[in-house]
Length: 537
Image (cartoon, rainbow, N blue to C red):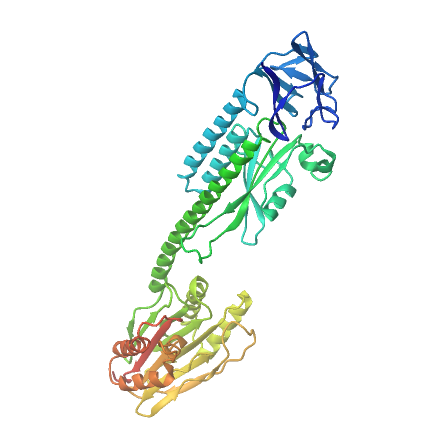
């Protein structure tokens, strides 16, 4: 014999109820035969009675009405397959069945909903596999979530480096992007889900327990909410290895209508989608980082070319002197710099310096220093005066934590060398008179506005060489942790005293490389050699 029953879908989930006595009452109150949830379900909403072998549905003066197959009713005879809605869309959905299906068999409509959700899930997962651009992946996730759930709105928030949630994208049911002007919501639920890592389903925000907490969302008419954590799980082969498991954000959906948003199958589908979405989002992030890395590498190559172009030619000569220099940055670009200048009065100017730090900031600073010294080369200032002016200019710019060590020198045809050493490694003067160090000057440039700088002097004999270098030379380490040191540098400089300036530079750099034997370079290596040829050269 056919048994009357109801297939129920409300915020409490889907279930099958047998009608085994009459009248059979339905509503929110606990005393009803079928207790239902939903914002539009009245306390005593409707009842089913039996009369002459027929089953009659009666509305009990509910606030939001009772509907059969979409038509509002006060009383209606039920037939198998009739769809009953308690409320206009924010209540409960039921199907009246009169057949011999085994208890627990799902209705055709419910089965159809499940198939639709599975199809939407599969389509979404396939689409996610081809996503590379993060914004496109986020849109695919949201559109798939809306298709699965029947929600009105959806958005994604992702975690920042500080483990805070950052809003990324919101989409509506018609798959349009929602802007700030058309979208608003509360952060309380997403932040709770992100903190706990547990899916949260709110059956009715209009309930007293929620309305006061989520007033902003309630004001928009939103009643039903599902929020799912985005948990990224990185699988590893070895049992002892640790995976990169972490929570990367949340997927949030809401609606003014129940639809299928609050069903158990919807929750399962959204959690499955969230797992796939987490992988797709991380892959998109990695792809973006890869592109960004490639772009940065290209920019660094261009910057290195520009920096090398700014340096003078490796060799220079003014008749009475010959000079040569070379710089090997520890990265693609470095903070060491050097330059030569034709000074007034047939003099030869030169500078070598080392900017604190590495990478692009140091490279920009070194370019600035080159420009400053080039500007001062024609001003007939002695080296101490020039360094004083440049120091004041740097201090006025207030470049935090950026200072420069340098030596600026000028040598004339008679071999008279005037110089100022601003906190730099004292260069060697190697010649017939033995070895001298150029250590007169003052502190590093760029820290103290009123720093005093003194002028140093030395007389060069024909054949004397001045060897300038950055601390990347003397502090170059080998595999045993030993540094190259000033003693080894002086030994090489003395052994090459009679050769041309460019060959002298090559010998020093070759000696440093042989000493380190491929050990990682931690600092820029820069060498300059000035060889005085004599007034009559």
